[in-house]
Image 1 (cartoon, rainbow, N blue to C red):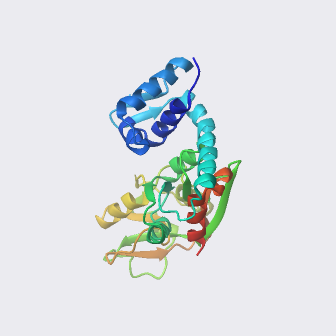
Image 2 (cartoon, one colour; image 1 turned 135 degrees about the vertical axis):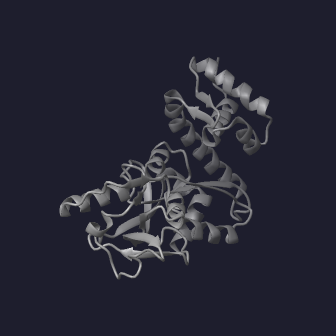
Image 3 (cartoon, rainbow, N blue to C red; image 1 turned 90 degrees about the vertical axis):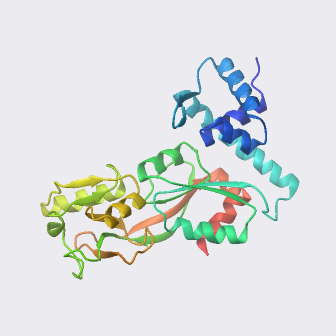
Length: 287
């Protein structure tokens, strides 16, 4: 049984969407058509490609390895289509974007949509660890991420440099201070992102140098969740400066020991930089 182009197309889109119905909508076909093509491919391979959970489809190891190849096929097909159709107006198409913080991603997306209103943009906010995983799996067109790992075959362009700051409610007893120290923060409830994140790693590095330990920690998933926790008075959060939209109820304060500047990049795979939509977004990010 030969693997057909429709099977590869259906699999690739289901992998991206994590949903048969959403893949069918993106491809402009019925759900049953996608299901049939996926079943034929699984029969040909002799292994399941997805595990079904209530939250959606999760790819198996086989699917992850296969997608690394089929995504390259998809890129080549898009390049051919662009050459044939002279896709110069950028009046149609789809771009998938992920980021580990709302800013600077959202302002760039806003500018891009003004210039190219016909392009569908899917934007997902993830923690730093999952952002890197999806980028390495080629499971996205563009990632906007702070201090990404070096991944072979990727292109990155620096957007901004920023530092970590403490964010707290404006009525907090420390809110009037010009800056704070880790020793002062050690006595507070701290709101931090997931273990292994850039923020966690830098905070642990700096605190170990001055002999400070944080024993009262609330761990959140993303910066918006952390911001909500601060707004509700749960504690003090450590954020990348300007990573979330400002609020009159929150103030940010420099932390003496956290003076390192970190770079945020727009990142994609090198082959995708030839796609006009991806190139247009990169150009917009550099304006």
